[in-house]
Image 1 (tube, rainbow, N blue to C red):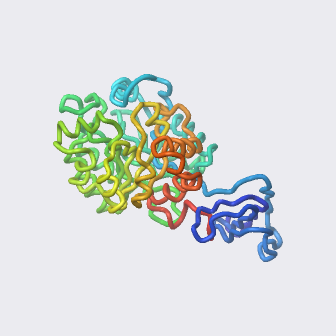
Image 2: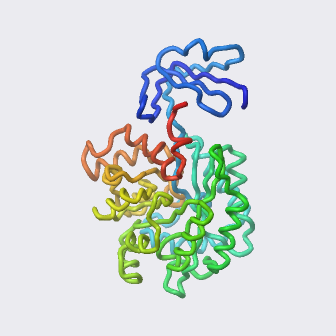
Image 3: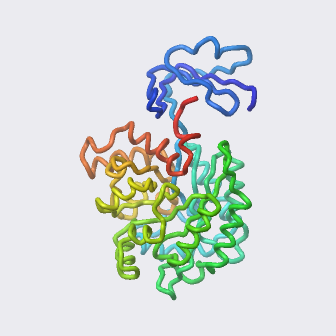
Length: 382
């Protein structure tokens, strides 16, 4: 790519850059792997030298690439099951199938899921993989290779579960891991794959699965490891009333307070779903800079509820979008999540609750903030 120049001209441009947000007719100049210029009207002659490749963007809208903040790529293999189930019912039904995944299934599912995201305008995605059956092969490497082949910027999360059913958790014992082995595997994932450079196409995060599948000790130890190694933290939180009741029964507090007690709120953390938050919890997310991955399709499919997205944005919390796993979405595209985020916010708070421009921000710059990359991606600017 170095030394090449491409000009896209005649298109509408939504930069998601507060300094110059929109052009009804504008252009983009790309030199190598960087945006060199963005503007309105005709392309200045200085950008049209010999060897420039010109693309007619008439009738098109240029936006930043979408950022998917929550996904489970392996679930592409189990779409369409447990159709009328709550989250806990759905998980209980699907855990036995997920216990059978191996490296071949993971690679095929990842390729299908990543290709679907790319076709919907997504250029950066995370993946929360927390099921590691013994003898299944190198599942993390399989999806890393799939993302590299397809050309997406990738933030896979080394997930984990250590709280099996025999100890009061939700997952069956055969799909949980030993906590010591989890921490070793987590550090190995960072060593093998994490690239902190600004142009990085691959970064690792650490992501214990949920309060009902992970012990308090593993949550705390994972946070310590992540901060020692300079990587981000991710987990599911406050997705359903069942989860809230589980936390009250087992820990004596609501899910957000449980995480905060463990040091899990902060600007290096983003959390999936966050449907059931009260006003004080929304304020704490804003005060601490804790990010949220809003997954409207999945939340609707499982009847979980509607996350308070507009309130979180007003509080100053980064709120990105997540397609979530195809087993709770069936489609796996990010573009429709942007539309549903807009509609669901208005269903909750009225027609002025969220604007179309704000919905685009969720899919782009807010998602980049969740992943700690707003200085590099999420907007169209030099």
